[in-house]
Amino acid sequence: MKKIINIVGARPNFMKIAPLMEAYKTCPLIEPLLLHTGQHYDYKMSELFFTELGIKEPDIYLNIGSDTQAKQVARIMTAFEDVCIAQKPDAILVAGDVNSTMACSLVAAKLGIKIIHLEAGLRSFDRSMPEEINRLITDVLANILLTPSADANQNLINEGISPDKIHLVGNIMIDTLFKFLPIAKQSEILNTLQLENTDYMLVTLHRPSNVDERSSLKKILETLHVISSTVQVVFPVHPRTMKNIAAFDLLPFLKGLIVTEPLGYYDFQKLMSGARLVLTDSGGIQEETTALRIPCITLRENTERPVTITLGTNELIGLDMQQLKELTDKAMKGEWKPGTVPELWDGNTASRIVELISAAV
Ligand code: UD1
Picture 1: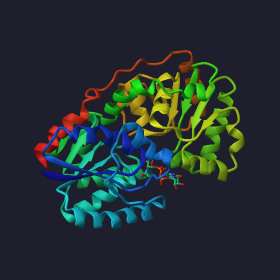
Picture 2: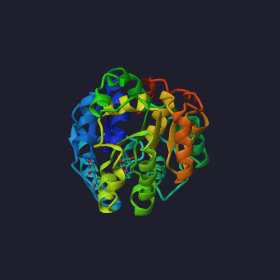
Picture 3: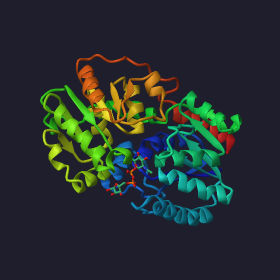
């Protein structure tokens, strides 16, 4: 039996690890352990997802919490090194691009433990994003690179990574989406929020480039405030964003918006799958809207997920608020590209991965 420590830390990791933990059950050759670094710790950012997605309790919890970039990474590394020395895993599996992903990869590389990176090869080519640094370092260290789309394979090849390490497996988050959508559709969130009708747009914002500077955050909220006079705007607010809205004295702009705390998976998918338009700066939501063929506007200058634009329903607008108003109008009128779903975003990525790694580890 090969022991694999599977790492999660922050909200976007949970929907990626859930189908994999399930698929391991079919493979007697692998002993999977689940480790949660505790990078995200609020009930609504973490535990609720374990419950809804049926993920088992972590075998190991590091209780790291929030801090500056370097301190958070350093604390994860110190704690994870002790775990690796005690557990002696054959491999670790890390997902996505959060600080926990990179921190644990660095530790494993130095101890000579194999690294499997799930969602390898994505590049925004923007090193001002903490996630881009995490992706570059994780991919350069990883032994098995599992990619969601063909562009990711090409990025890795361009960086000189040996093709025999790279495997196109598809998008595992879409496994979770397709599995839980029927349950999510039963959520009562539309009634709870007292929406007048189903013509609404859904907004999420948490990227440092949008929410950590007062001027950018104000610009976005001012525009949403204007849009909310004609369109119902539902806005579940990430803790980082809420902290900054309060600190920058921008709370008055939330008037007219339908504001909630971060939502669980079911409520969020219910809202997303019924929205006329989604406005976001999240990576995962660009992909989920493409899979669901829901119009999506991304408030970023670049994306590490270009297939959501070339094939899917995504449009990138940076901080162009005029374009935001125009595209919102178009989406509300139902004028949007229909989009197609990329290859292998089919709900079967986890079983492909387990088959592959049971032979490779
Ligand atoms: C992290 C990831 C980002 C991912 C996002 C999803 C990195 C570098 N960033 O960003 O890629 O898209 O998660 O949410 O890993 N906080 C709470 N409760 C929590 C967690 C955080 O209140 O459970 C607050 C804290 O004030 C903290 C702030 O949110 O300082 C930011 O949290 P952090 O984990 O540093 O990064 P995110 O912005 O969540």
